[in-house]
Length: 248
Image (cartoon, rainbow, N blue to C red; front, top):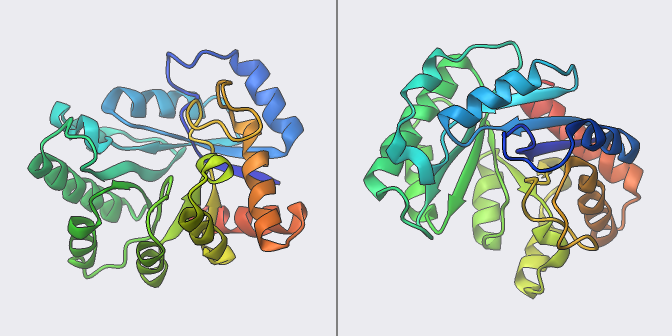
């Protein structure tokens, strides 16, 4: 069994037929998936979508790009299918929202996660110098995952030492950056989570197609291969990680 811990197939503009997507996911062994909110609207869509299916779950949050548009409504969102807060964080590669707004939103949404005893799905890009002090400022341990991680070996180690998981997706199958590939291969398997980020970041060998949860299998195959594990072994370990973090 595989778990796609991060996708956006719930959003209204997802271009593929959902019934076909879910059928292909089942055939590929992607038996569970988490639909991740990126805005207030997207978070509500994730909840509504997840409530239709026993094997699909929702995460609510506002992406750092969109924090300028507000996130106050998250606190009133309730559903048995909400299993995380995210994706939230800091993104300094782009400046769609001012840094000070991103930082305030990150702190407020971490507080929401702590109040609900939920793990956090983090999006951090070119912002770890600000992110680590914020994370370390909380006396309560924050459980979560660094989604779509492509940063340095040092920051991967920083995350693992803090008890965070590392989310990997199609980027790991097609990047030609040798340091990135070395970092991917060194992620401890007990801290590894698989994701697609569908419809984005389609893995090799399907580059150019719209991404979907079934393609998490290609991510799994890549990480099994670079670790010298069988697909079944890698799937079992990463699925156990997903169940442990998100209480699926």
